[in-house]
Amino acid sequence: MNPISRKAPTHSSAEAQRRLAYFNQCRDEIVSTIRELVEIESPSDNKAAADRLAETVAQQFSQLGGDVQIHQAKDFGNHLQVDFPGNAAAKPLMLLGHYDTVYPLGTLATMPCRAVGNKLTGPGVLDMKSGIALVLHALAALQDWHKEDCHGGLPRPVTVLLVSDEEVGSDSSRAITESLAKKAAAVLVLEPSYGSQGAVKTARKGVGDYLVKVTGKASHAGLDFQKGVNAILELARQIEKISSFTDLKKGLTVNVGTVSGGSRTNVVPAEATAQVDVRIARIKDAAGIDKKMRSLRPFNRKCKIEITGGINRPPMERTAGVAALYAQAAAIARDLGWKLGEAAVGGGSDGNFTASLGIPTLDGLGAVGDGAHAPHEHILISELPRRAALVAGLIEAV
Ligand SMILES: [Zn+2]
Image 1 (tube, rainbow, N blue to C red):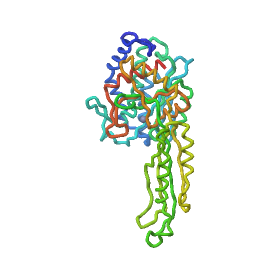
Image 2 (image 1 turned 135 degrees about the horizontal axis):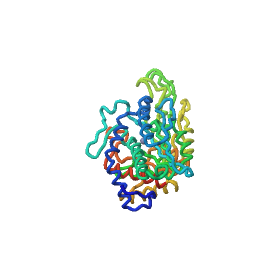
Image 3 (image 1 turned 90 degrees about the vertical axis):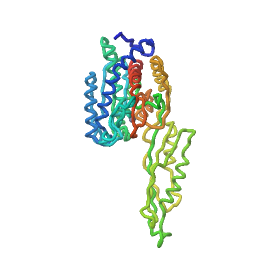
Image 4 (image 1 turned 30 degrees about the vertical axis):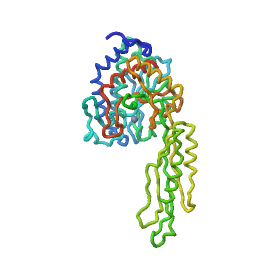
């Protein structure tokens, strides 16, 4: 194959087309890598299963010459860090993702990894095992294109971090993600892209979880009605109040997602609880909504209210650094012959952690598809080559 220029954003369209042709040729290989990853199930809550996948992924990265480091996790699969050398004077580029899925062990039986027309199905195929495969193939291609260069053509060191607990809040991996991000020049997140056109994500809302627990007093609804203190009635009033905290103009939403309480119809209920999901678009709104939640006081003084929880992921805001990364990605896509869109989404990822540290972060660089976390989860096979070309281009350009 013809030599390919190193300078991704400025290389001619002809070179871009050669890159695309390269990935078109190895499209079936990319699909079989994805299949291999999907067929090793890796639910967040099953360490043994998750570790099996981590071992396979570690092997694949070490075959590419990456230096694999295992971060032991007690309750989750081990987190995988892989370092590739590059110009040591430059700060590393961080490629971030997760290998856990929301699907319990055995899901493959009803949701097999299968290619049907242009769709490839399976648990976690979109979110985000295809993203891991894209990283593997983008790095392999760069090594192939730049065999003669030192460091396999990497203009700066590359650190890949794949965690095992993203789908359950990333408590055990967050510190690792943040410490690696602090050393990085930028972070590329291989989570699924947005929509049918595969937009990247330049803003994500921050996420909080609260539990509101009301305690009243039980009594016989017929014999002793007036001795009871109805916790459900109190919670209902609180729900009205909590829901009024939503401020759509600020991109702040408060959703009471579950309620429970009471024991039987003839008992005045002594307990009621609600789980509340909070989303914020701007970090400056975090303290305010947290204070409002914690300041809830009982309408009926005979009731007791306990509030637990807090803001778990800060928002990923579209900073100048994020916008500049997007501009680079859009230029690479343009060279490859397509228009890469951007989107602001309500869901969080580990990119929220890195972006809120001020490290330029671009998310949604993974596959194009639909149905993440749902039985119809799938990716579009035809989109894989240009996604791989985009990731490879960014690794070179950033
Ligand atoms: Zn994900």
